[in-house]
Amino acid sequence: MLIGEYTHTIDDKNRVSLPSKIRSLMGKKIVITPGLDQCLFVFTLKEWEQIANKLSENSSMLSSDMRSFTRYMFGGASEVVVDNIGRVLVPDFLRERANLKTKVVLIGVQNRLEIWNEKSWIDYKKQVEKGALGLAEKLSGLGIM
Image 1 (cartoon, rainbow, N blue to C red):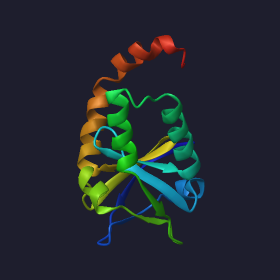
Image 2 (image 1 turned 120 degrees about the vertical axis):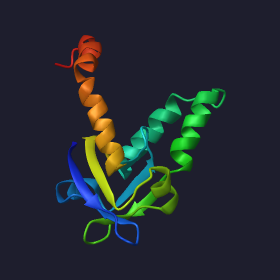
Image 3 (image 1 turned 60 degrees about the vertical axis):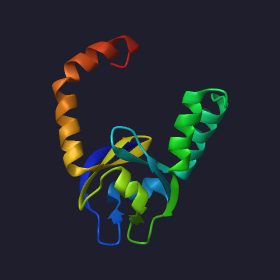
Image 4 (image 1 turned 180 degrees about the vertical axis):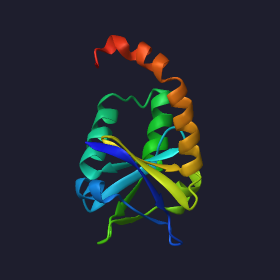
């Protein structure tokens, strides 16, 4: 399981280091794709394959929403190699899409890593923290805790 919050820097060659605690869990190749809420999603190849299978099983080319979402996720996905010191190259088009500057925040979220613009993450986190009690109430019926 991927957990934690890590602040890192993107170097002048568009590379970001994966946190050492997460690096060993990700493998040598990963998939970076457009995420939701202005971030990028990062998946292991195994997890990406499972997501692809789930979307394929539950999708219909006749559904406009499904076509749009799968185009968004798969059309923007990029398979990248983790180098020997744990860095990954973030493709320019994905970096621009998530408005990634020099400082980024990597968030472990169960089955994925998210890469956020530092300011966007801070703003988002403040917003969620203000509404955490209401979110917990809404989700209470799911029997999570």
